[in-house]
Image (cartoon, rainbow, N blue to C red; front, side, top):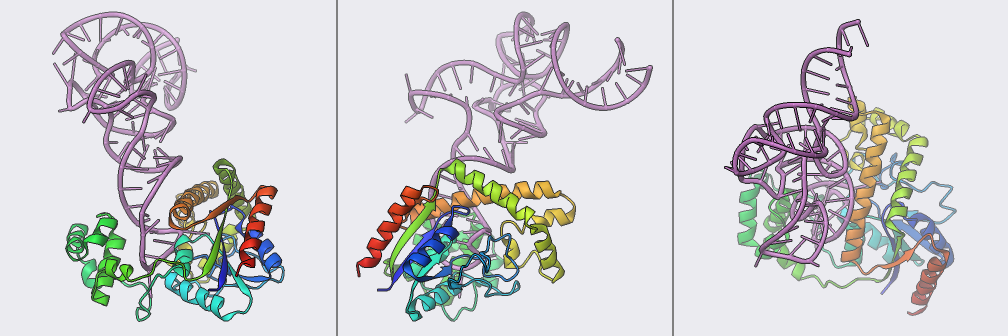
Length: 301
RNA sequence: GGAGACGUAGCAAAGUGGCUAAAUGCGGCAGACUGUAAAUCUGCUCCCUAUGGGUUCGGUGGUUCGAAACCACCCGUCUCCA
């Protein structure tokens, strides 16, 4: 099994710096596990690494899509696995999109026939109560996991069932639920309060670096608020600014708030979905400790 | 100085005699997650030794079987006139 070092953690926790350090130390390439950094032109708001910061280390899955193109877990899973499998050098996956990381590492299966996430138009006409009743009847196991109000997931589960001819829970039960790589998942963290302060300052920095200009430029090029990249934090909030309902200060406060809330959700995912080895990224000693652990892990084949 | 309006939980904002520990939204906390995931969704959020108890709606006093709601005064905020 190939070894994959995963560097996870909430936004602003120091993943990028740590990934560079690891890449240098262990001579690896870096795959970005991020749903927004794939889009060209979305640089400042997505916290994308600059050419200079890359320091000659190979980075993958950044700037691989134009703003109008779609990108999803399935794309990430295929591309990341291919990179890992075909390169001689080891790969690091660095990113904060929990689902992407998990889908790559574990035996998640997506229908290759299905171009992109679809929803059956017939189902879309029905209301939540009806959808939920249908699911409860055809796939009680899955219905147990999805709340009546979560229309998106209700629709998706029913669509999958219709396409594949069997319930989603059955498809999942056929998966191994073991990691398909020898992965070590390192998680950057720090005290919550400190992280939140870092997030606030980081967003301020984005505004100072010209986030507004970046968004204006994207809009001028024809990117709309409906495009995926624009759904990202740091981008979607500008809609209210251009509507005239918010000033720049207010937009910034919103971006900061959304980033903090997002960080919390990332923690929830990472803490409950994957075996993460947490370390305090601001603490040199703790960072050394984890680096030693990683070396150790690399040395055992 | 005069006239009026208002003061409700962290914030905003309903409530105008019992059904109210007090709607709703925001924020906060916790959680779910198999193709939009920086998405979508859920629960909790006055205090406590908690299927029960305690203390609330600017303050004090009063009316009433019963008040956040009615009355009086006080304090504070805002608007208008001077």
